[in-house]
Length: 464
Image (cartoon, rainbow, N blue to C red; front, side):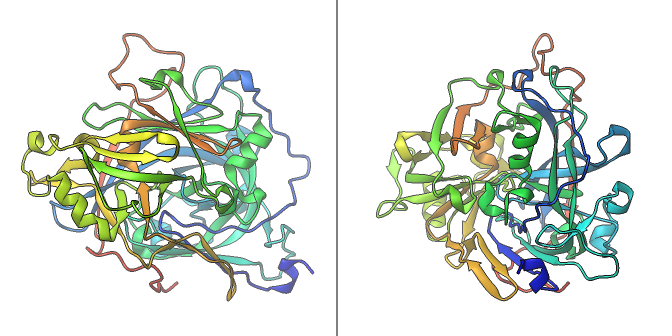
């Protein structure tokens, strides 16, 4: 028997400290749907990203959280019939989740809502079969927990629809780049963190292990359908320099690099995370105790604005960096270098410009966040049966925005490796490159989020 026939309701709880996502497989396709394909020699599709800043808590001295958001379009093959949604692209999850007209919760009503009815998209069960009129459909409950923001829950139905990259493109890649996926259309969501979240949905870019199956994985479906090279790349400019963030699908931009790419293999790619081995950690010339006895893991996570570190290492690292009580811009950018040595000798070096920021009161905030021993990543539960236990994060780092500020990062889907190269400066060129055509300047928006000062521990219950 198929899963959809056995269960009237399918509940998936996907607890991961990065930004956790669920997924369930569906195999049916839209009959007669035809989408023009890109060819690999047309270059990558490049989308500009806007930086949305949120303040965590009331204190002016508290850290800010960044969301880099871009536009996607949902629905019909014809461009004029699509619905535009503002999403953030999350390398730590594997599902497309959209606010929808099926949801009347306060957090839903504050955002642009996707309508499957307007799109003509069918609701499907977990097995991919279209739900018969008048019958209950399978549902999903998704636990979302970014390592530096309040966790929350989303409940929704499975819908099969077309997800297309936004219309803001580079020259040479004007044709559609679309993927037909099973997405989650929200029917309910918690106020935290979604009520004031600066996006309408999430597009997960994790490997297939974070999806119940390949039909739920946007990038896997995109490269199969649109004929793109199996890479995507993320560029995040250092905010002191200004400039526009962007994400590239189907390759990377060599002109964004100040040096060659160095590659690190993905560890346990079957788990779905873009994770690497961290062999050692140094501050200046001092090697910290963490990772000495056994190698650590580093989760490369675009949803995190900070560097997640093991809680037992946080105090040692803060003392070694020496900036916690510093005042002023100059003092806050004058700290020692932080080195993360990966498998194969690849070394990521962060300066104080990447791992610290000056607060509104002039004090220096270290962009470090503790990962608690009890936290796990990647557990999946179907109904009350756990299909995969999560991985403990006691010896793990979350490689978030501080790393992206310094390194242009390329994710290779086929070879299961991550490339890091020093990012080129973001000073505007004297003339437009072929990639700059009709792409708007970087925009930034600040949003105050009234959240609790302390995160709930992983596994905390939220009512829906």
